Length: 62
Image 1 (cartoon, rainbow, N blue to C red):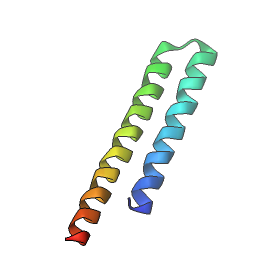
Image 2 (image 1 turned 135 degrees about the horizontal axis):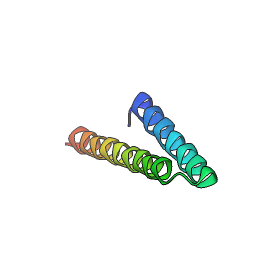
Image 3 (image 1 turned 30 degrees about the vertical axis):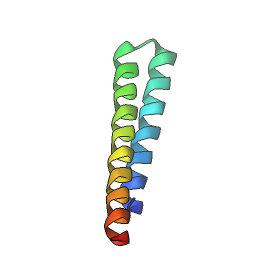
Image 4 (image 1 turned 180 degrees about the vertical axis):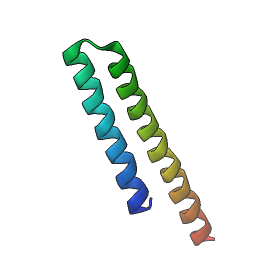
C-alpha cells in the first residue's frame, strides 16, 4: 500500500469517527450518518490498496 494512500485513508477514517462522535454528542443523525459513511469509504480505500499490494506481490513472484 502506498504510504500516501494509506495516510489519506487513515485520515478519512479519523475524520469520520470524529464526525460520528460529534453527531452522537449533539444528537444530529445527519452528522452521525456522514461520519459513518466516511469510515466506510476509508475501509474501502484500505481494501483497494490491499488488493493492489496483493496483485503487485503476485506479479513480482512470477
